[in-house]
Image (cartoon, rainbow, N blue to C red):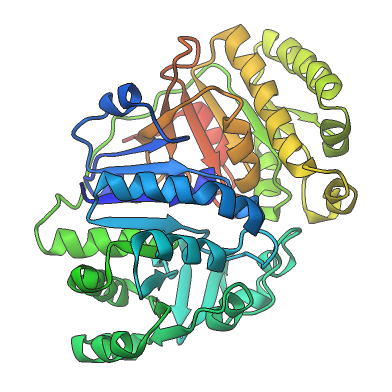
Length: 436
């Protein structure tokens, strides 16, 4: 097997699956450690992942849950094992601690050095001399000046130098392979001296390809474990395709239109807000869900919202249940004061989506918001996902085919998108269909 991986949220996990599938690598993403029977359903696949929730969890949670996942991924015996993080690298010592996750994995894989790759030009994410830049609305910003990520409600990015940012989360030393020193001798020099994490710069197609080649070259020396965004996977598949080891491309059947669709959103990103407003203008009916109600009285709120959503769908409408339209309408402060408040919001939205799916036999659904999607999908009794249709124009948010023991959910098409992902027509395009 080429790759095993753990995604720190569900949308990021599908991002990896999409990047592999686009290049002809058959990939399955499990929502938990699979049973032998579930795993056997995908025998012959080249890559396997587990979608997790560590991006929204504490270091204590990581200590309790990540070891079993890393041990399972290790026993898969893949050529590479990837701990996947968001390409905006938003994280903090108290939540989504990337440094702690790397420390746990290093112990299990017994590696002295952990390569780290964050830049992914396909997603408009770039690293140069250790600093992270990200695209937004046609402009590129240093991440600590990014209009959205610098103001993230949970993990605002106030430091662009990833070495300094990560140093808040781990005592491991962090070295850099800069883009102007990606040759074999220069990389070996850094590795010889390194005792912790080594960050590789990636800011264009050439540096991505060379980083992938370096990862292939040093794997036997440093071990299979590598951390980073889907930039890890894009770098690997580019290098493998150049070496003729994988096809490098794949085709997918066209996506037909569906009569109506259920979408739920717990995102407060301006990107998602534009997508929601665009959907309203194209025939979707909006249903506002107060996140504080979902957090404080989840059963009552879910029952009320599910009843209204089903009534609207019974009239033949596509329904979009949303908690916020932009950062200004986020209820983050009061919500964070409620134990597991944000988790309950995602779970509640998932329960609402499931009620609509089961009553109307829906064939397609959308879950929006990185943390929201993770917890919402957990309510749908889905044990795995495969890539149904990659959205090439806006990578990182593919439509997936779900597998479930529940016949009402088995085979349903589910799209999960992070707050910053997708064009303004994201919801509409997935309802109205796309050409191959």
